[in-house]
Length: 331
Image 1 (tube, rainbow, N blue to C red):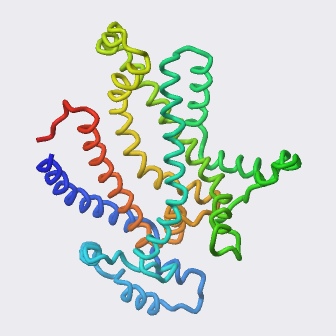
Image 2: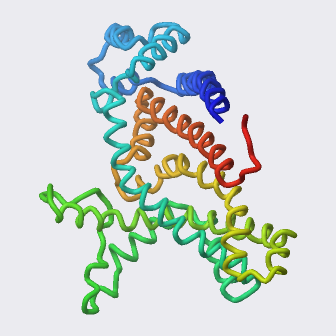
Image 3: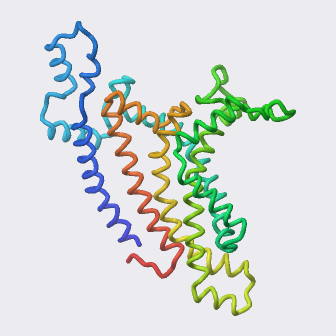
């Protein structure tokens, strides 16, 4: 296993470098640059001023020189400087990743906590009423766009909310967006206030992943419970609970691990719409703002960060295979 890990870690280096080249070229090919947007609509800016600004930011140099300068700085922990926020990209990303984790972690565990039991129950009771209801809800969750579902949640819980007239349900009047209430800065009140702002975006994020996890869990369990070794376990007279948990579930989890591991980076990549709809200051919303403002240093840093997450969690999924299935060996 150790030799496999070292080999995979070494393979990650050219992969990350290759991705950085592709991302750099794609962003360089995008129309406009930070200086063009900076001087747009300003009649007092002269062409020589534009040329001076492009020299200042290194935009007048050949593309390959700009890339190698960026790569050398990135290897030393410098991802550039945001033209919009006027701060280093790494510090800006670090703050926004922390805000995103407030949504991603609860959404991830809530999705798993609901999807895996529902998927298992649906598989063990195939073609039952509960199975049909679960299948309908999962197709609903997979097919609806995140931004539409987010807007519907805002309308129900922040605009309409007719149930808040009932005694004891006023707390269900939730904020339409934002991160926290101004003036609440510390203590238990801060966390309770943050929780109210988190509820709607967390619910939207978790529902989207909950649906796909449930479908994969159901399909994987259906395939496993029809195998001969499961029939043999039942023929031996083992209790159904033992057959499911010891013989079926462990093998059914192998393909689910792949989906779960690769969906963690997708939680960050899929969050831009949700964070934008709810005005949540996370890394996803920052990516949208950076692309719209041609703040390419920020956009490039975030995209490479997401690509690195995909590679890392792909490796962790391979390691999890060996833990779940002793037949898998990498040495």
